[in-house]
Image (cartoon, rainbow, N blue to C red):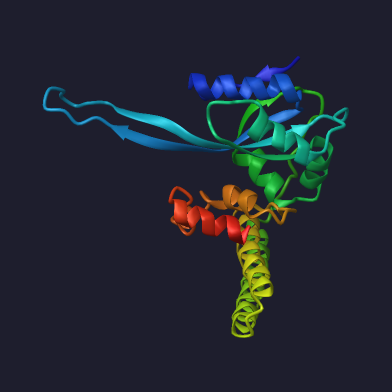
Length: 235
């Protein structure tokens, strides 16, 4: 029997997640991040006005069933762009059987999800078992080394971009700038979540990472028209 865990009582959140469940028929859905925006009311006529927390965005992990034939990218596009859901959603999508294998191998992303994320939906078809022991300190050190490697590569790409600018080879300069940004984004995502993102799409990388570190989403303030155009050129 399917189980829906209603830890979050926000009606809009419930409507959106249930719509995803009805269309995708996943094995599990985890809430990875629920980003709130505080709305404070100040009035001389109201004593101790309540604070209202609006959900600004949502990051979820969708584990697909063994019978699912559509690609992860197609399912992600359906969830993020075709369902007309109320809350902006960024979805990580992967097969439940692969996630189960990651758990067996003590993959840091899978372990963090099972130990810390809120399980919203469970089709109860594929049981997941936690390993008896997880050396989180060793895992963090490994991920830090990977991040430092990504940073070094980004620095080299920036140096290449500067050289091509001097030579007025602007397409090559733009390519190297794109690669530098990609290295930093994928490095941050890997370090903070353990997940190795397989995409060159900067928009996806931006949405995956923008809430992982304070101020990261403001590096490219996409709400500003000029900055948004610059980002699209880089993309």
